[in-house]
Length: 378
Ligand SMILES: Cc1cc2nc3c(=O)[nH]c(=O)nc-3n(C[C@H](O)[C@H](O)[C@H](O)COP(=O)(O)O)c2cc1C
Picture 1 (cartoon, rainbow, N blue to C red):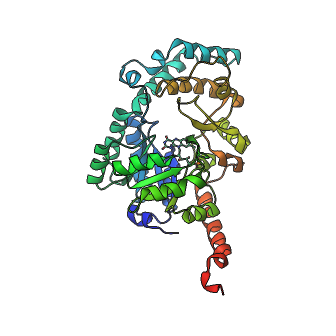
Picture 2: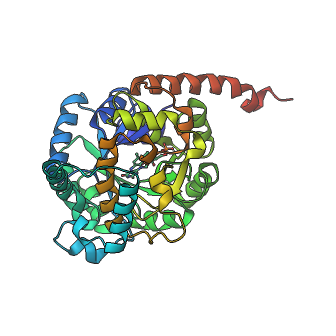
Picture 3: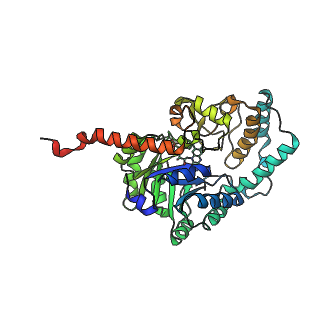
């Protein structure tokens, strides 16, 4: 299963795991894959602690971080110094408040509300160029970080050049061929062709259609990883057939014991069917594939206010999330997850998933070998 990107990054198998949970990053890396920590939800101080912990647990192996530099966001809101929650327009704020009141979701007690606000204040400016820059500076203090990936657009060229100068590789997610051209021009080394099936921010083109287009657009020297809907060994083989050098998975790790999802969120995850993973703007103002709930759907109804741009819509989402969690309301939980959610029914472990992927990969390769062994013909 070793492909050239394994040599370049120093991992055994080209199974990349995106996760916000440090334990997932460590486990996948120790299992021979490549863990990438989603850093956009951390403050620089938290990221420093997480990377220190990862360094201590990955046996000297390399890993990566992922930042969020969106090409479209509310620059004015991002530049203001007040807490984002305080500058969300009244229309959207009142709409959400009324919905939570109608659903009888209690307010948090004042001291808890204050603690949650403080925690959010530390984290909320880490999307956008300035916040991501701070996170990258933290990552650069950890030599085992060998890859920086940007979601939501081409990373600025000066950041790419600087990371290259420090010996790191740079990746970017892309959901359509036009993105690939911009990212190639920015100098990225790895393009993550993420199909619409994926959890999180996602476009409209399916993985099967997207990957070969990105492979063709990338040209030589740029490795393509297939993402979106991948959780099985036979899909890894399919990704190779499409020209990818590896796979990049996110949703499948959410149901592991290493994942930090709350018990309520895991319950929602295991109950969800593939068709419950829908694209909605409720979480960030951009299309995110997430599990459908009453909360995501109320924003789709006629008369609902328009979604705000990041980072303001994110502020609304986070304000509601803690209250919903505390109220134990599974019917209101909408968290990012891709279509593979329909295959996830019980808690497992990162290592078990990797083993299953590799076993199924080998079985599939053997099953297909008569089909592709041309020398047997005639
Ligand atoms: C819960 C969740 C959060 C995500 N957050 C991010 C993120 O912050 N940055 C990013 O580059 N991708 C993010 N993604 C997308 C993943 O990087 C990955 O491309 C996607 O999960 C792959 O498709 P899959 O979900 O079908 O495995 C997220 C995915 C999930 C499931």
